[in-house]
Length: 120
Image 1 (cartoon, one colour):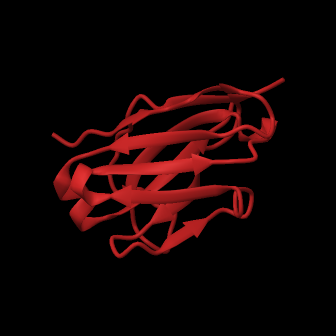
Image 2: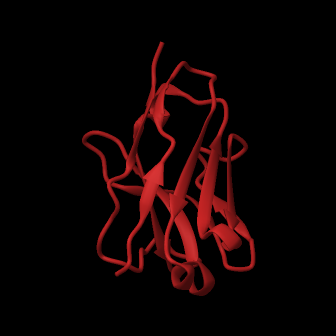
């Protein structure tokens, strides 16, 4: 059964940092590009960072230069290093496989997500 498990969120002051982790099956990591999505209250879920099977990366303009996505295929784990956090980064963060070059997720379900709250 395909499953995504996100962790690493928390409460941080503006300008602070967090590192999120996402684990999934080896099959998913070997076959698909992986992405970090987020959903803020009252807003649609959006793709903020993605990484291809070959290691190419892509970022939403809102996080470019502040967030860094990476993957460790040996551990079936993807990371999102978030620096310079802003209140507008507050959201629940999710991971999923997605079609590279789009924002379209591959799997119809989500993990539990991890809450990131940026506030003083």
